[in-house]
Image 1 (cartoon, rainbow, N blue to C red):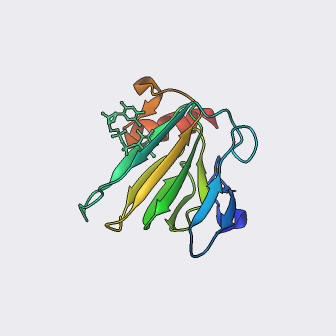
Image 2: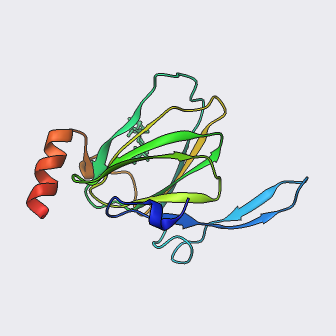
Amino acid sequence: MENKDIIVKNSGVIKLQSFDDFPDGNISIAEGKKSVPFEIKRVYFINNLFNKKSVRGKHAHKKLEQIIFCVNGRFTLDFDDGVNKQSIVLEDAHSGIRLGPMLWHEMRGFSNDCVILVLASDYYNEDDYIRNYDEFLKVVNNIK
Ligand code: T46
């Protein structure tokens, strides 16, 4: 996955430095304000994604910056800036996708072994979420 593959706004590919110690494992490093272009205030992970029909996300953030990684297995990320929409399969543990402000995003198609890791620029704040798609379109169109 390369930066040129991303057509939605406020996004991009973040590649972490990674060392392959095969057969003894890999190590990948994320550093705030270095490979990750913001100070990391929160880290969360999502696992036990056994429901094949599960769709997570379904929101946009007003201000939050995040980088989303699939550190094990795979899933499909659908994201949408209000004009452009695209879908990407995440399966490369050290390549993350920037989820900048005002990007509607959904995660689906999880493999049983999928583990999602997210680095976020701020603490959890429900007021930063837009969880209604029509409201998202209204806000994004007022910004333009
Ligand atoms: C995002 C995508 C990629 C907290 O209390 N603190 C937290 O830091 C987070 C992330 C969640 N929660 C609570 C809020 C809900 O009651 O955990 C519950 C599940 O959260 P949500 O339904 O928002 O989970 P996802 O997977 O739909 O979205 C999450 C993040 O919330 C969101 O910011 O961009 O992952």
